[in-house]
Image (tube, rainbow, N blue to C red; front, top):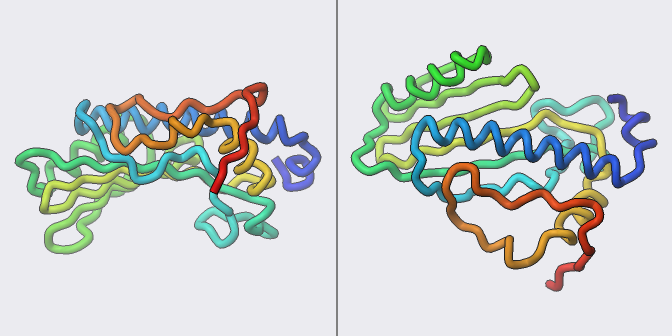
Amino acid sequence: MTREEAERLPLERQFDLLGGRYVRMQGLLTDAQRVVSADEWIWVSEGFSPIDGDGQRWSMRGATSKNSYYLNMSRTIKLPGASGAVEDAELMAEYFEAQGWSTTLRQVDARRYRVEAMTDEGFWFEYQVRPHGQYSLGLYSKVFWGDTYALTFAIVDRIPEERFGIEESLPGEYIPFPKWSDPVVPKVG
């Protein structure tokens, strides 16, 4: 979709497109988490709020902090007995490759490994294996055209405050994306 096409879309349609991307990304993240562990993961980034697309890896010409965005969500887990073995990184690399995604496994330094993969839909995974057993999984979207600020408020103001307190969850548990018809309740503070 071109910038001009996106700018002509009503905010409700932009909202629905972002919601579809969010739900798809949560599904991808869930499947990858389960490769490592079905236990609870600590939340690093929820992923529902658009982040300005200006200067990002996949920015388009003319992208600014107001007219473009990307999504990112990440989780981390401390695995009992894990020591950052290359086999732990290879497990995720094998999963990504089995999906048919372009995958790279590299040794970051003497004791850390990173696996990166690009999905067919243009989502980018990063999985890090560290010697202290803290492993992290991040998922990033490409940059999309859209009204970053209006979308942020439209989303956040439709999510009940009690849903914002999640610090850890099992794979597949995440904040449901709101519906446009949900009540708007501006947040205080």
